[in-house]
Length: 113
Length: 114
Image 1: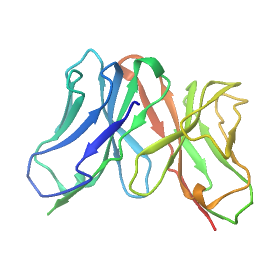
Image 2 (image 1 turned 90 degrees about the horizontal axis):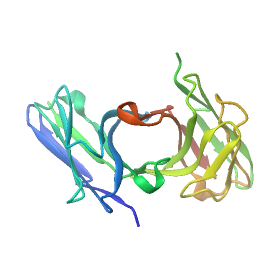
Image 3 (image 1 turned 180 degrees about the horizontal axis):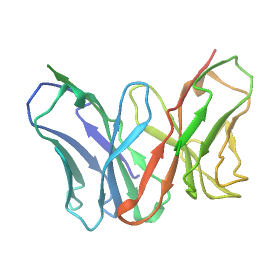
């Protein structure tokens, strides 16, 4: 079964710290992997998309990596700020079902001032 | 450009009632999706559509129906509401393929069935 897992479920860090969020997936035959941000009571916003052929993507203080062979992706946030507090969701599209995304359950991040 | 809009924002239903959740997008996207999100969980796909007149089931379709008569609109119908359908419902549209492949989400509808 194709599944996406995110650990930890929640993370609390002091402002300024660099941090890593983890995402693991079964079945390495992926089409792409995306990281989303969700603020409380809001919809999801796409942060980064990594194609199957890519190893990483960067946007500002965010860097996402992909290792298909180990079934893992990480989202690195540099110099964290209180405004980064949100839930971060990882979602995978697999080659054999490219119409849909399978989501992990998310990591709830709190950056303390 | 309003993006993806959903109505209503909140709704309380009694067991056995029916309702339609509305979703509209103005980006001319062919792909549209309905998800539900239970507390502390990720999103689960209910139904999706790859274009007007074409719909298919996702992971959790039981108790729901959809239609797609236009590119813009993708309503989700709940028949005979049950407490298990208490959730937050998100609609999304998608630009499919390549580096720009991403989903755009609406703000959600919070539904409670009592």
